[in-house]
Image (cartoon, rainbow, N blue to C red):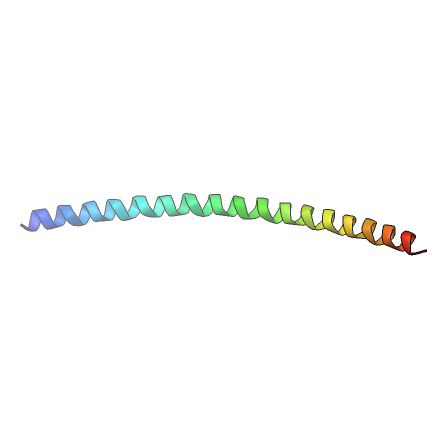
Amino acid sequence: NTTDRVQAIKDDVDIIQNSLQIIDQQKELIKEYQEDLTYKFKVLEKDIQTRLAVTKETQETEDK
């Protein structure tokens, strides 16, 4: 009975350690996604600012 419990505990520890490794791997992947999205948002923001400036300039030209 005690041997079975010890083995069950060892199995649980192995499962927990594997789960922690998976979590660490996923954290790295999420960090990469975050960096990629941050870059893409900056590019998008610059693009929008440029388009707004062109739109404003066009509007001012048409208003004259």
